[in-house]
Picture 1 (cartoon, rainbow, N blue to C red):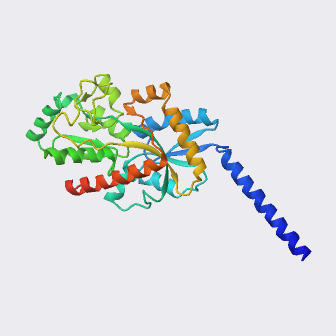
Picture 2 (picture 1 turned 90 degrees about the horizontal axis):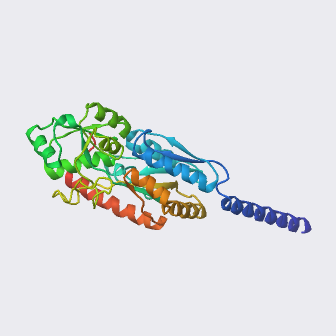
Picture 3 (picture 1 turned 90 degrees about the vertical axis):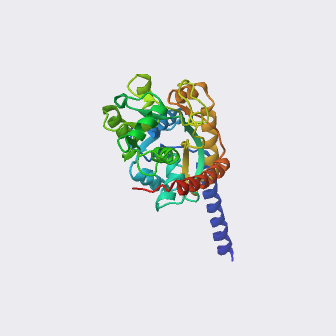
Amino acid sequence: MKRRAFLKLAGATALGGLSASHVSAQTAWPNKPVKLILPYAPGGATDLIGRPWADKLSQAFGQTFVIENRGGAGGMIGTEAVAKSAPDGYTFLLTPSAPLNILPILRQVPYDPMTSFTPVARVGDLISGFVIHPSVGVKTFNEMLDYARKNPGKLSYGSAGLGTSTHMRIEMLKYRTGLDILHVPYRGSADSLNDLLAGSVHMMNEINPLPHVKAGRLILLNINAPKRSPEFPDAPTLTELGYPNSDVPSWYSIQAPAGTPADIVQKFNAKVTEIGKTADMQTTMAKLSVDLPSQTPAEMADFLKADIKNNVEVIKAANIKLE
């Protein structure tokens, strides 16, 4: 009996020590580099947004936040990689909304956007618009519509890939206006931009062409947002142009593998919220035409659920399909 009592006491002590150690490890998070997987190729909007966040988070937590680009399949490859990662607080997804709220509607994906991830924080909402190459010879949105109607199939539009927000924007425009514009999917928006600048494709709708608008190399036709952009005050919104509910918003978030400890998620969310309120980060994101909303993980989950529902309705109404 004495031996059994001793073993029982020893076991309880060991378990107690393990529990304390586990709690201590979580409290000390992060105590090694953290990986941020971006599900698109370098140079696109996800990269432009992700890298400033990685720098600020590295400074704030005293550990390196490492960017890893895993592009392909409309964001599915990188998103799947995070869904299958260990929920230990050292691998996260930094992604636009499309792999979560558009792609799973259009094709079978190896993850569930609602159950495979734990929302962590919102890190930016894009303010972009349709841009066009000057060689087309149009300078306004309505001139583009007129040109496209007179030249069906002649205009080409480059997207970041099938099932992305940039893909949805051209499909929505075609649905609302009845235009015939050729969709050309790329592996990411950086590749699309290269061809746009060369005149190989004529249009895009993403943030990475906007510096070239300021430089006079591209023409901004409109803004896909509820209100005009302070960076481009002369560019009208789609609503102002007579096409309400056509924006197809793209919002960015950090997601953790399901099962990631709640205290890590809360600590991460609090730090992102803190950084997002700083003048430095707001200025950095404003230069990219990105807003910085703030949401709790619970609010994010509700927002994603509602967004998926809205996109199901739009995709069904517009009969959008992957080519």
